[in-house]
Amino acid sequence: MNDAMATIKASTRRQVDHLNELADAIASIRVRQSSLDGIATVTVDGRGTLVELILSYSISKLSPIEFETLVVDTCSLAEREAFAQHANLIAKFNQEPLDSGT
Image 1 (cartoon, one colour):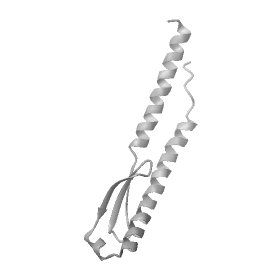
Image 2 (image 1 turned 180 degrees about the vertical axis):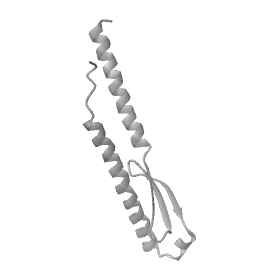
Image 3 (image 1 turned 60 degrees about the vertical axis):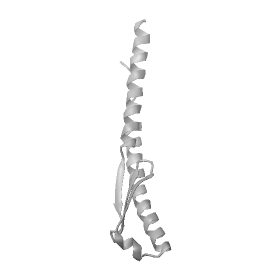
Image 4 (image 1 turned 90 degrees about the vertical axis):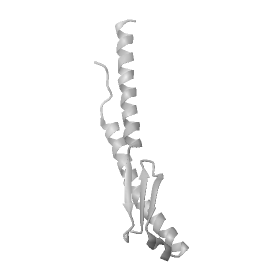
């Protein structure tokens, strides 16, 4: 393999590794948010997917619509924070100079 091809291959490998680091960082995002009354606690991942829902016994005192509103509102707060962290990772990634291999 000639030097130019080796340089291209090495640069490509570094860029792929960098992309994988970004993907790993996004995958590791976890945001935990509790409702103001502490009845519901949710955890979402970096894509805003609900990965955990913890409810206190007080949930039984809520009507179905109150329960729905509480969980959805709490999830929304967590999702906003997760998306902000996701966006910050992407922005940081996009600001980093591409490795030219030289």
